[in-house]
Amino acid sequence: MVADSAGRGVRPQRWAVAALAVAVLTAGGVSVGAAPARAHAVVAADPAGPASAAVAAAADEARARVLRLAKSGLPAEIRTSAWNALRSTRGDAAITEWLAPGGGYDGAKQRLRDARSRNRAFCERVVATHPVGFSPEVRSAAERALKGTDADRAAFVKTGYAEAQQRDRTMREADAKHRLEVAEQDRAFVRALAEDDPGEQVRVAARWALRPGSTDADVEEFFGYGWATGAALDVEAYRLRVADAEVRRHHVLSLLVAQAVAAEEALKSSADAAQARAEAERAWHAVAEHADGARNSWLAEQDAAMAQAGNWQNIARLAKESADGLWQKIAAPAEARQDDWAKEQTEAGLTASFWKDMADRARDSENRVKG
Image (tube, rainbow, N blue to C red):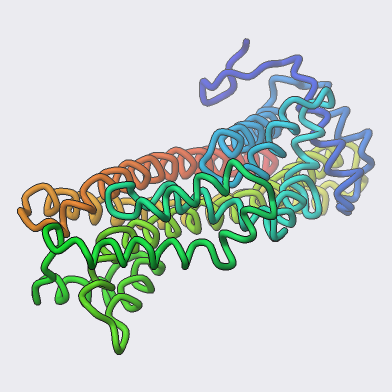
């Protein structure tokens, strides 16, 4: 290991440094005004230099991003595809292609639209959000569907879920001893959630519980599983949205860094040094601007995740302090969502730090080529 100008570790012989630059120049369709071999040459000639360190940092973070997706709570289609890319014998070239438009990530996203995938995801979500103590029929039917065939899961989604819901509701209505009273303050809280909760799907679930013609049973079901279901959907939507955005950012970063490396190498042999220098400056400036934009986006995501974590922390506290049977049902899901959002907050902060580091590297390179 050697250290770059900022004291960060760099692996001089890391073949992916060169491979990344070549791959994005040849496969990415980028016009940089220099041959791919020349980009390869600058990396190989000065493997410990600042330009090479920027390429290596981008490649390392791209691989780390794919690893995080592989270990994430995203759908199995994405996780499996990410693991396949990580295990490829083609190294970082496989990572670059997986992140590129039309690559492995997009292919996995396309598979999510398949009815079989949607049905399985629905069944898994029902199992995760419908407690046995409140929805025994629904929970049991969902578990059977998961263990069954694609046809079983399709049937559960089409009619089985609604039928099991009705059986649970009938049993609850018949069980006068355990029937929970819905107080006006409970309805008032649900109304507040319908307007102000930070999660879109929680707001939708709350509005459904209070729709015209709704009864106390609808509010009870909101506390029993509707709130938890909406919260789970909000986490899923957040994870998928930020994954989409970051995959695109890494693809663009690889292209911009390759352009900058090639422009800087072209400066060494250009007949018009002033023009070549200006092009190299612009190329590194573009990298810095892209990294700054990504960092700002992640700081905003960090704030959003922090707000959600704080929101669920308060809900968990209220549930624990309440003697109301309705509130006790949301205590465990609230703690789980608080944990989810706290992890997302940490992840956003770490990712923002990477993009700041990349912006700093790019500005250092921009200043260096100015002479």
